[in-house]
Length: 456
Image (cartoon, rainbow, N blue to C red; front, side, top):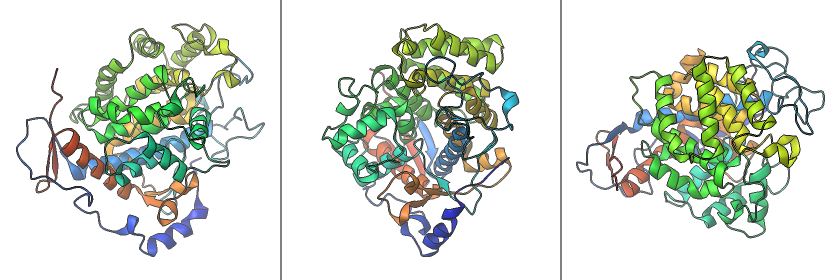
């Protein structure tokens, strides 16, 4: 059963939008008002991108992320394996799609509050998408980049942004490493110290993946710069394996902008995943997880068999240096970056670039299922663009976003639109192209000229 939500916010949305909220209703300006645009000159041949088309792709990113995030929340933590303090029975399979949702590790006997059945969760055009932890910190970072007129956030800027826009009391929609980092920020510590293992024992959890993927979209086709831009935000909560996994995702998002649109999305994803593997040290468990899941996919076995193999190899046998089970952590570290990275690779490879199938597999795969779905929903949504996402589902969606569901301190009562959010993303890319990449912005043609990386 497809459902809608946030109907209670609909009237508020119309009131705010109808009253002429500046951030939502004003026409999209051609230029970033806080950037002095250089005169366009011929640049070294490289990547040429249209700014308007890129804005549509950014809208697709936000829309795809929201669809996948909210769909994944239905099954979040329903299935975490039968080791540790939370035994959840057999994993879901494709046969469970459309059937009743089973309780998660917190809910007792109750199914998901978002849907009683395992199915897509949609926001109709007259409703709102609610923010969640897969979208809200990225939203904060985008605002901070614009507010501070920079491509590289400082630790103090991140600390100020977290303090301004995150509630100090529950429910503040922070968990594990994000919550610990916020506790440290409130005590006066400044990133990257908040992600240092000496200060933050949760540094191996999944949090940095949720909050930094968008940096890849700010440096189109230049993962070298995207990863540098994302480094401090990543290190706000992560180190070592969890940092490398996050860098892998940032690289994939950056390379997606330069992938050949004439090729099938499946081929493009496989190519950029292989290129992004450079951020996973060859002797690390993330690199070995990547090789293991890809090999299972190439064997031709089902995604369910591959997922079960991931569970047995990493949570039962604890191979490739992944030793979370031996630590006796709550729910057997079901929030850990590692096991969720392996699960995300199952949906990446077996989804084969199909947005609907990828979200379905991600939602059914287990563990922290809203996170891998949000990751790939956002990436494939970006590659399709907003219209492509709507075409894939054969319907229209809301383009309004309620950041104040989880965060605080934004204009317009926290109601924004994907169009406005995409416009801001384009403005950030303007600054990155001109100031960091020494590329060109041709406003007469509405294009960016992005030079290739110069080999050392």
